[in-house]
Image 1 (tube, rainbow, N blue to C red):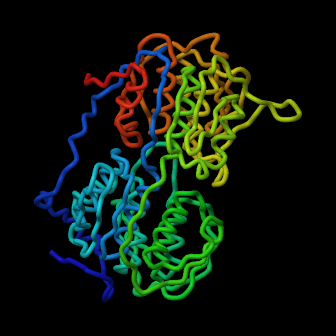
Image 2 (cartoon, rainbow, N blue to C red):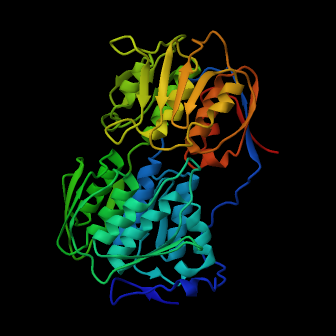
Image 3 (tube, one colour):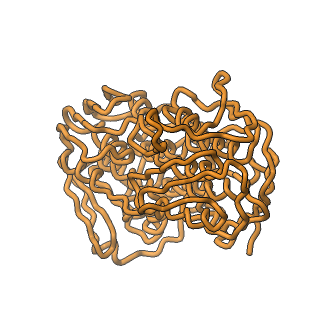
Amino acid sequence: MKLFQNRGKKTLFFLSLYKERPHLTGLTGHKTLPKQTTMAVFKVEGGHRLHGTITPQGAKNEALQILCAVLLTRERVVVHNVPAILDVLQLIELLRRMGVEVEQLAEESYAFTAREIDFDYLRSEDYRRRAMKLRGSVMLIGPMLARFGVGYIPKPGGDKIGRRRLDTHFLGFQKLGAKLNFEIGDDFFSVEAEELKGCYMLLDEASVTGTANIVMAAVMAKGTTTIYNAACEPYLQQLCKMLVRMGAKIEGIGSNLLTIHGVEALGGTEHTMLPDMIEVGSFIGMAAMTQSELTIKNVSYENLGIIPAQFARLGIRFEQRGDDIYIPQQDHYSIETFLDGSIMTIADAPWPGLTPDLLSIFLVVATQAKGAVLIHQKMFESRLFFVDKLIDMGAQIILCDPHRATVIGHDHQHRLRATRMSSPDIRAGVALLIAAMSAEGTSTIQNIDQIDRGYKDIDKRLNALGAKITRIEE
């Protein structure tokens, strides 16, 4: 078994060696994930109002970036507020099997020490299977390329929400001097470089994961790297700030123009993740949809950007109380119009625009508003296809095309009808859960492992507020 402690002579991966698919039973002493139950469903009894206080979990999208970054150093990295959700736990287990020493310090705190990486494991069937389940696994390449001179990953999985290309990642690596090999038949990427060299690059899209991957590759490149049209959302800022504490030299954090001066090596650090803005938005919409009174604690309000203002455009009232959000019970909420009286449009956009992960929530909440709104999902062509289930429940929605849907709200005059449905992805799954919680009767939601990928113990947390959600096996 070959263990590489840091980048030395050029390391080559041969796809032909991978095709042998050596059997691996796993490393001894590893804490494994609980076996998933694919037949689990939610039974949701609608019509119950919520009341109380809920605290959002650590941010899923930040966690996937931060956990990949631990590969950049052989020193200890401590991370707090780690959400215990399926995608994150799977990535932690993948790192452990790659050779990273993982220590759970508390329920939401971990220590990672990547002294050495088992590169033989990266050619195993077990690595292929686990990495393909995770969209975030693609961000393992940047750190491995920076530190070891090679990155190796199968085509990652994740939500089935349309085509999400990886061109931005690999074009960035190539501009830094890396060579890309891709075996179409096996869906495997191999990226290698004798030496990464800083350069100027203009990204073809402000990809969050693409920017994160390129930044992690560039922090130890020789010379200066300038990235224009970089993503600048809070989670990317968090990654950059963590890298700076580790010894990286990054300028322009929070803007779309990043300048990175390469360093020889990075050290350890301690990092605390932000609360998940998608959970915060989900809870705001859930409170309005179920006519509930709810307090959301410790939301990091300054990092929510345009999200609160967009909910206000739907007529949802709330108060900022310190770093908490209080949503009073509302029997009705009315969608605003533009100044000329035309129909309101809510669309996603790169930060500081509205995150696309919340458009499913805005759409379902609009079904019980007074007025109409056009939901425009620009980035993913399949993310609105779940609306057929809402239409079955009695919602008035016109799906104009794969990217646009017009919603005419019921103003709580007609409740949605309970039905049986399946969760197609994380965000649509929670949108359907919100719909079921407001509906008349008991709904069944299948494929709830999609929801578990992004929301920790969502049924238990909501039941504590008065919801009636039962997790059963069929």
